[in-house]
Amino acid sequence: MADLQVLDNYIVSEKIKEDSLSEVFRGIITTEEGQFKDFVYIKKFKSDLNGIPRFINEVISTTRKVKAFSDPLVASVIDAKKIENTGYIVCEFVEGQFLNNIVEKSKDEGFPFSIDHVLLIASKLSAALTTVYSKGYDFGFVTPYSINISFEGDLKLYDIALAPHMVELLKNNPALKKDYIPYIHPDVLSGEKAGEQADIFSIGCIIYQLLTGKPFIEEEGVLPDTRKKLNEATLASSSFGDEPLPEDIKTLLFRCLTGGFATIKELNEVLDDLIFSGDYSPTTFNLAFFMHSLYRDVSEELAKKLEIERSATYAGYFGETRVIEKKMSPVIIAVIVFIIIAVGAVGGYYYWQSKEKEKRLLAERKRIEEEIKKKKMLEMQKEKEIEELKKQMELRMQEALKEAEKLADKKAKEFLKQKMEEERKKQLAELKKIEEEKKRIEEERKRKEMLLKQKKLAELKKKQDMEAKKKQLLALKKKKEEEERRKKLEEQRKEEEKRKKLYGTVVAIESLDAIPKPVYKEKIVLSPSWRLPRGAKVLIMVLVGVDGSVEEVKVIRKIRPVTPHSRLAEKRIVSAVKKWKFTPPMKEGIPVKTWIPITIPVR
Image (cartoon, rainbow, N blue to C red):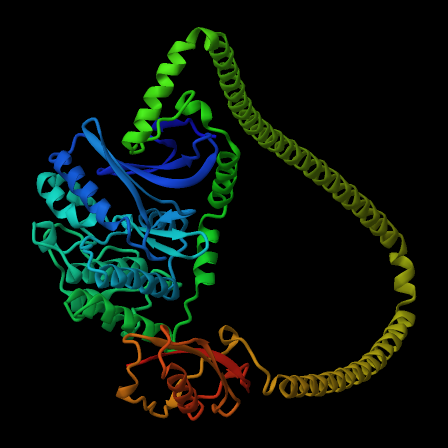
């Protein structure tokens, strides 16, 4: 367990990150009895910044307003306070990583974001900001430092209490700007008031960096030629680094970076349409898999740390008792005064009992401290055991390598010795043969005629053997060709059976050769008099048949909130979609069926 400190009513645990603005720690909220209650993020601001007291006052004021704000995509703000020459803010905790850290690790590991990952992050980010602005709050300073991606693929937007005041802080501290140049419009960094348009621009910069691995703005105060930069950009996820951005992605980025969207809500709708167009298939599961692959060791280590801190006791960190501020009525105050007088009157009687209670409290505190100390010692012991095991494994590996080298060297020497012995025997045999040949020279001269006759007989036999071998080879060739023909017919038969088996089966959309695209859409007619909820959407799953027709439609997410005509509208939508036509879904060149998701906006 990390070294713990106390900050007001919070336990400060491990430092998560640090930048030129602040330090972020994992914090712990406890019950009055000192038991674990919840984790939080504690962001403590640097005290050497110009204008930090005013900035802290503004953050505290904004915190009071946004405490009531609730949205699953926006981190809850719990508390904000002044301490000494600076202050801190407390926010909701998520088991994940902030996007700026993810970008750096992705680059270091050579494990880039895919288009699907980026579109899902952008969609969730724009949805979070849409909710922020729709409820009358401002943001205006979106950067990867404010975006957290959990290990389960969910997104949380942080700094809702800080973002509206960042421009003023940067005016007083120009050195801070270097961290935000790649994401914030130069006019905003120069002091211009930020708003929705500034956030849309920042989302475009973040999308560009996640896709290409490079910042859109590389120099303070200088905007590049947007069209030229987009045309020259390549995907970081391409195999050879030369695949350009898809045209629909370039169009989206150009609108983000040149003021082509009136509101973030409009951007969010375009992103959703792009996601469900069929060309891309982003899912929370895929993003979670990306996070677990990138942080395969970190996520497990963090889970162990959190489990240790959840099971620990923290009573000793706040002294014997904790001060709880409550407003008391005059009657309660009078009763307390009466009790104090009564206790004072019989103080001598209870003096001994209070001393005994104090001893028990001290003994309990000592027991808790000993328990915490034992847990720390146990943790250190486990770390030492792990290190010792690693060292032993390393030594065993080195010894095994040395043994392997010795064994290989010994075998090589034995092999060389054997070869030399064989060569020596061969040379001796050759010498012996030469001596024998010398002795037979005279005899061979006398039998010359007989040898010539034998030679002719040998040539005749050789010719006969060659003819027989030729016939044998022809027979083998014919047999091989017959075997190959039979094997080919068997493979064709199996392929035909496979086609018959696969034809018309339901296949997951990610396993298809090509995702079905709509070629005809029946117009959905909804009466304006129905007064359906503005901005509502219907998510449906469509079963596309082998000929591209719609065989079945399921409503996954209905219209919310429900109105008297909601179900009628859903039936109209289902009825129209059943008449749609798509390109046939294909797997390995065979027509199949597949379910595809479609989002229908209710306008």
